[in-house]
Amino acid sequence: METIIISNLSKSFNKTKVLENINLNISKTYGLLGPNGAGKTTLMRILATLLPFEEGYIHYKGCPWDNTEQIRRFIGYLPQHFSAYKQLKVFEVLDHFAILKGITNRKIRYAAVEEVLDNVNLLEQRNKKVKHLSGGMVRRLGIAQALIGNPEILIVDEPTAGLDIQERVRFRKLLRKVSKGRHIVISSHIVEDLETICDRLSVIKQGKILFEGSRAEMISLVEGMIWEKEVTADELEFIPDESLISTKELEGNYKVRLFSKQPPQKAESVSPTIEDAYLYIMKENQDVEQVKSIV
Ligand SMILES: Nc1ncnc2c1ncn2[C@@H]1O[C@H](COP(=O)(O)OP(=O)(O)OP(=O)(O)O)[C@@H](O)[C@H]1O
Ligand SMILES: [Mg+2]
Image 1 (cartoon, protein in one colour):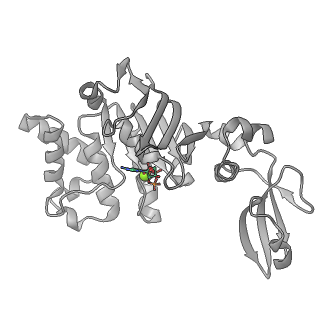
Image 2 (spheres, helix red, strand yellow):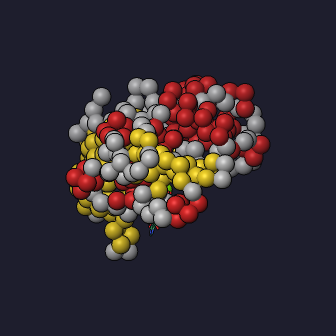
Image 3 (spheres, helix red, strand yellow):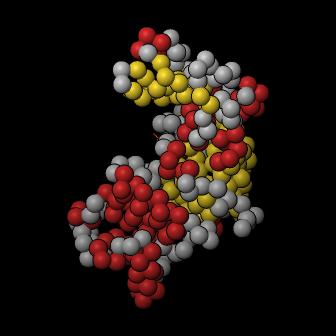
């Protein structure tokens, strides 16, 4: 599989830089992790050819992004705020999107709609109006429209936002299924969304990539630095914010999870998670070279 190559990409809104010198090679199932306002949607919209950029270069299979018509044939996109006409039935929505994708032959279009409905497990809901669907079903409808035309690259922006835990788990499973045989770029601010699906991921904050690599590489940033210990309420007061990962109440005392390069007193060393690594990268707010040198 060829990769999507992003080099030296920058994007500004009204002279404010929201993406700064982004360099990424995207392939297979790729995660883009970052807090609110980091620039994830901006990058996704650029990849979906919906937003121009001033500096840099993106290409796939030798085709540059300014060849919009060609690139769009490779791409399916589920926007962060996907919605469809509430009065339309599920199959009507998909038929409409299929027309927009240029499938003019009715028979072929019908077959394409059936195929994606089956793929996202919405065949039974085909005659339901959008207004009668659950949040999870609307998201699945969103994936279905992105899959029409069998795109090589699927771009999915915050796919599980607003879903309850059960729907979230089901949606992640669907993403894993539709990722077979294509590239898929998924953005999220929730570590859990990406950690079970993605081969590689990057962490973005304030328009800059702070980390890029595999899950194992991300976890190794905080190897040997994660500790748990029991403290009293008074002791808890003295733990600096930048060291504290989480706190759990424990029969009057507290169990805390900490970052520390030196072993803290009476603390137990624990295995790091990708969530620990994400928090660490966020706290440092530095580029990865510096983060690594501290570790
Ligand atoms: N059309 C626009 N005009 C001006 N500024 C914008 C525009 N779109 C986004 N921004 C700004 O760019 C920055 C990045 O926004 P973006 O929506 O890409 O972040 P995000 O990572 O997707 O955040 P979220 O997790 O909230 O979806 C923010 O500061 C935002 O206010
Ligand atoms: Mg966004």
